[in-house]
Length: 346
Image 1 (spheres, rainbow, N blue to C red):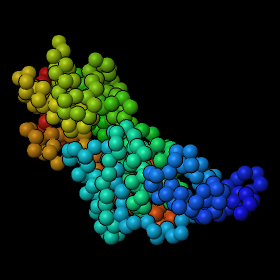
Image 2 (image 1 turned 180 degrees about the horizontal axis):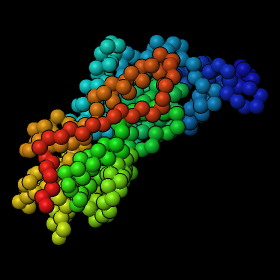
Image 3 (image 1 turned 180 degrees about the vertical axis):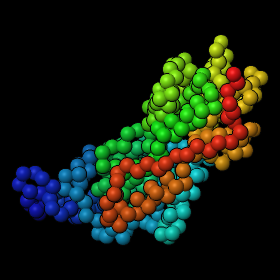
Image 4 (image 1 turned 90 degrees about the vertical axis):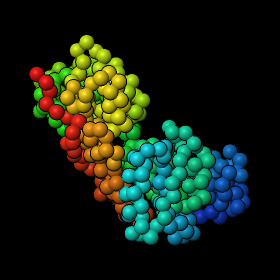
């Protein structure tokens, strides 16, 4: 075929995407080679793969039938330890089951990115759609999904979502605000915060909510009372031990996740402090274990299961050809008051 059949004179993409046979003719390779690239198989040279991917980006790719998609949702975690992924998987499975879809769990080779082997596996499975939790696929990987007609939704992303990529999260800023206001309402003024990683969007938002509550109450924010716990029990323990050894130690601690709060409990125990008599603690997430801590943890409930269900609903709407009403969906958070907070001692 001539180039005019695949694109306009000014180089703009053609009005209709190309078939495997048309792509093969343009690339001067076999249809089997193009099929291997389209299906994410590895046995194609890097130069040939780049050429075919470039043609797909320029002209688009028209599968024989979109019905070739497998009846499954690909759920991608950067880590599978703890209660957090369980709550997420429960929400995805709830919606997928209603639509007679299976759920496949996968994990990129490294926590910070999804490597070549991961995207090839996704393309070979041809899922109805992909939900990535916390992490964001690279631009090249997003393009590969888009050219195959596989929709993508980000769930609880740690980075600002790329333009045009739908995401579902929680109102983290408001969560940090109400947690700190709760402690202020109990008379606390030396309120510490244990944040997550600097690069994590949820952590930054929760910490901003903490600072805003202090500012609204006219309480100066002390940089020395802000620690970084990395969303880990060990981080919460280390930062709490530092904070609680200060000459003018805090009377309350707001942590940016329940794991860090567990670390604060351990530090208080080591230093002979009682919760909440000597130290009030507020967590974030309200994972199932929070109610069984001693004492039960006051925490901000992040609706993880509902967030996952919302992301799955959005994904399936896109798979049916619909457009998201909003590209950024934020679900509300709420404070769950238990027994780890009490009025400050005068």
